[in-house]
Every structure is written in C-alpha cells, then in structure tokens.
Image 1: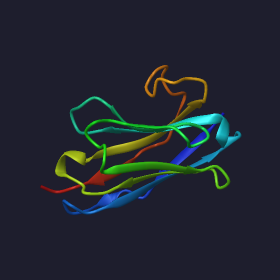
Image 2: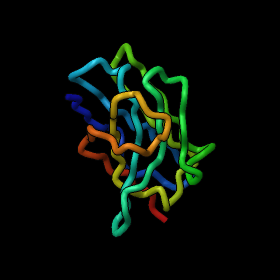
Image 3: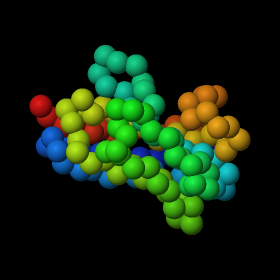
Image 4: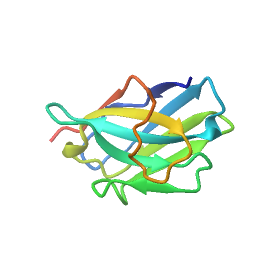
Length: 124
C-alpha cells in the first residue's frame, strides 16, 4: 500500500510558475513509478507526466512538454512537478499517482494509488 499526499497548488497568473509536491509513504518509493494527472471541470482526467522509479525515464503530454518538469527524490519519498509558463488551460485538479515500476507505457496499466488532488487555477 502506498499513501500519496499532494501539496503546492494555488492561484497563479498566466505565465507564472508553481511547484507541486507529492509525499509518499507506506512502501519502498523507488519500486514505484509515479505520474501526474489532471482533471479540469467538465473534462475527463488526463495524463500529464510520468517518471520511472529510478527517475531516469520521463514522459510528458504534448500539452505540457517544455513547460513542466517531473522529478523525484527517493531518499525523501517525494515527487515533484515544476510547472512554468502556466496557461489558463492548465487550470485543473492535479493528482499524483503511483504503480509498481514494471511497465514502459506511461499510462497503461492504470495506476493503483492516488492522492487526493490539489487545485491549480490560472485565471484568463
């Protein structure tokens, strides 16, 4: 069992930056890959970024590539999402997720563990 808690959301003007964090507990963090997803009002949840258990491999959705950076610190059992050049369309609840680090595909199979989410708002 892995317990995840996100933090760092808030309101930021377009063009600004935010850093989300995900604190993990329960199992050996490095055995789990981690991802960030987001869900905007009235829309389905979408994949944002993925990082392997070692941190050596990352994947990004095209919509955030070159603006967002996913990272992790296995010694501190934390994952982060640095978000730069934020746009109004980035407004959503952001969730971190984890699954055992056995798969190459960043979105399949589904993630087993989820945090409660943190709101990011970028006014237009």
